[in-house]
Image (cartoon, rainbow, N blue to C red):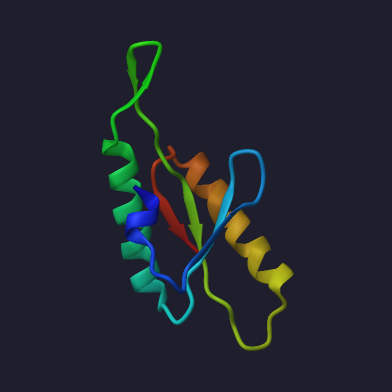
Length: 97
């Protein structure tokens, strides 16, 4: 589901146990938000099953953009804070920072 929605220039990697980083170059925040909303809805609608029971999978996402004078650490920290606001706000949502 995820691979269908990404471009060849996009990059996704596992960042932790249940966390992933998605880099979407040359994309304004609005476009990134739209992409993440599409992914969120697509994953939620996927028919996952465990031991014969349907399991709903949701995504919480923190979205931010690189500024010209920032380090990657600063950007990742801001995205991480947005992610935890998404989780704390009820999950299954995108928070922009």
